[in-house]
Image 1 (cartoon, rainbow, N blue to C red):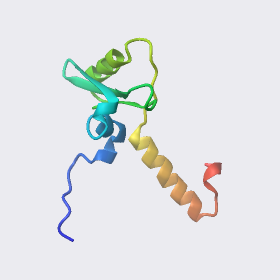
Image 2 (image 1 turned 90 degrees about the horizontal axis):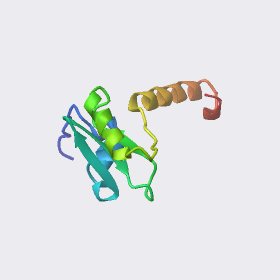
Image 3 (image 1 turned 90 degrees about the vertical axis):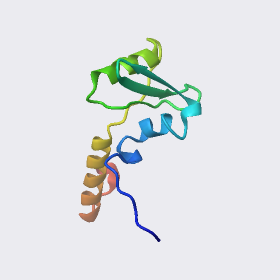
Image 4 (image 1 turned 120 degrees about the vertical axis):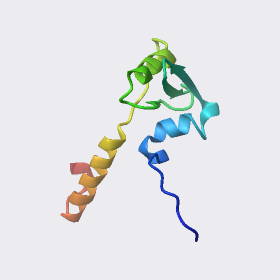
Length: 101
């Protein structure tokens, strides 16, 4: 096996955005507004949406645009998911089951 490239931006750092803007782009609607971008799976596909950069207000404007005032979507915070998984691993090692987290 050869060397593994390490980049600052990994697809799992923002998995829904990576998906709607990449491999699943034909299943999603993606818009850009004022230097920010957001995407949303088509409503028949999945309830997930994402912003390119949560720290960029233009991305939230893009999300509002793609939602068009009548749709809803589920947003995931990758940092929160990582904290949850870390906690699960810690508690599992202490004999706690995951559903008690």
